[in-house]
Length: 432
Image (cartoon, rainbow, N blue to C red):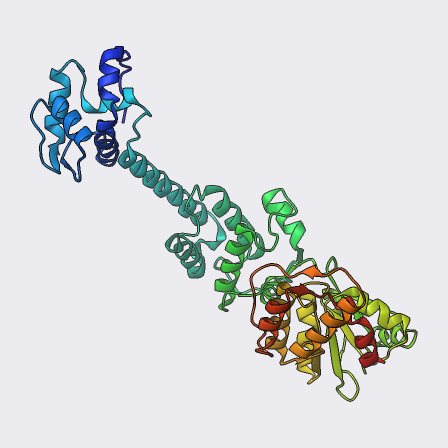
């Protein structure tokens, strides 16, 4: 809708009359109604629970007595009244002059819908111009994205880049004129693929909208479920011959002596024999044979200091560190060991984030609590106090420990947070 013509400002007397507090509710209600109705003065307003000040102001404005606790006002009549009075302009112009400017919300909504429809039409045309046009899964992908409401604003760039990425991954999906040997699939690094299709090496990073769109397309093309966690997302990338970054994140390990016969397992055994910690990448985990002899109980800690102390003390028990959070590479290692029937024992920080992490690890792997019960906490808290160490306040939202119903109430009662270092000597005794 075209903007209203600029009206001259009200003279001081008219402005004072229209700005009196008794008319505030009227103007607010009228503004809301006009913005919803295309700036046209239609329908009625009903103001209830009028106070004396409002009744007086409305009586003067409408040129008729308002005496009851409520008033019904027809907006066409109000518009006519304003034009015929000293105000000299209609309701929309009056509200604009009183400020702020009116917004035609209906027109804005219609314009947004029309623009979105246009952009989706462009996306459909872009898909139709690619080899994916003959693939039912590609059209289903585009339909699912639109229905899901994933893209609520200007989908053009994201959809275009997603289509280009899928075409790059599935270049030969159109109908072949004659049978031919299947081409050797091209393997892409995810950063390389992102640079090719978006101009940025991080365009397909985990968690980005574009990555989710492309993975949804890959899942449909491969007829598999959409991944719900990071390991599954990495596996789906690999199904499409895309190699995620598998070297930048590592898991800290100590004392792993796998039975495999390649140089990789031999290197781990040698490092364990020399009491050296090892950082393993996702790439290494995919090639290692990690079955351990006699399927021992593997201890899992939260803080790297525990691994360092275990190495200094020459401990021999296998130990894995989450380094504060169970990232994809940590879970991948634990999943691999769990598949070989290893049992786990877990220790972490006695604070609420520590309990959250412990719940996750214990719940996923059925790990035993490793000096992580209410009596363990009480003992450590008392020992810390006796040693004269400054207490660390326990802050945040309490979290129930799934393995010990008494732990969270005990922590709340004492109000002290304890990091793993407080139990370091006891943990080393268990690892010796």
